[in-house]
Amino acid sequence: MDRFGEIPTEVDNLMQIVLIKHSAHENFIIEIKGDKEQIKMYMWPEAKIDVERIPILVREYRGKLKFVPDDNSFIYYPEDKSRDLIDIVRDVVEDLSTLKG
Image: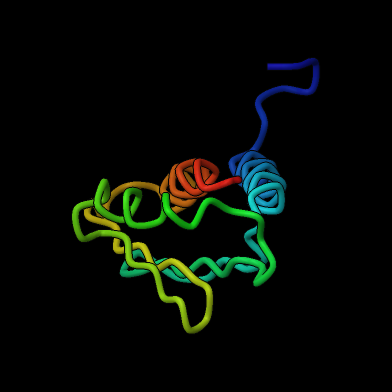
């Protein structure tokens, strides 16, 4: 808490989104869209990533993450629908950072 009181939930969510966007940008993700059913993350076509790591990461997600080479994207299917969407996206973006070459 600062001298102005508690941070409103809306402001906290906005700050979390800004941090996710920054991390996504650093990891060559140019667009994120979706909902509680699926989240699609598009990567920059010229991204310098370790492509050999893609199948390893997909396997680690045990069917919840799919790579779509036609549009250079990843689709994540959240298992726990009760989890906050911001937390889910942050975690997946962090895991995608392991692809950086």
